[in-house]
Length: 107
Ligand code: FES
Image 1 (cartoon, protein in one colour):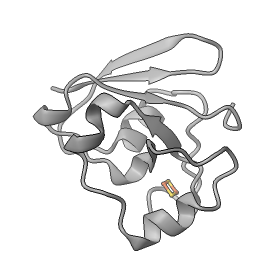
Image 2 (cartoon, protein in one colour):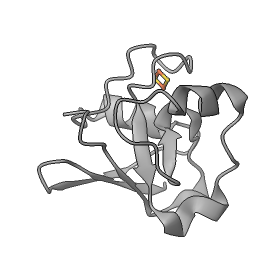
Image 3 (cartoon, rainbow, N blue to C red):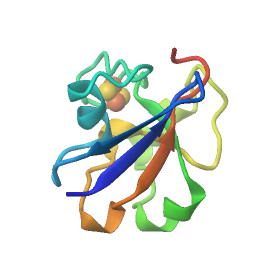
């Protein structure tokens, strides 16, 4: 199972063994990770699952599609190079150790 590290705004880290095939958002919700609300349930329409992906993993992810990119343009926190919607990142073995930071506006 891939491990995901969630860096939270209080300075703590949640490290979770995640089942492959789940999204980073789903794993956060199932484990009560603070700051990832996922109001649309993963339909790519709310952007409340915004995270900053560690740059070490940037080249392991497919780039955001047009819909995700448009939503990222309107996120509450600053859009950065590593900005992604966590509902669009499906975990597999290649993402073991993935580190994502929850933005400051999502606490
Ligand atoms: S959960 Fe709504 S856009 Fe990701």
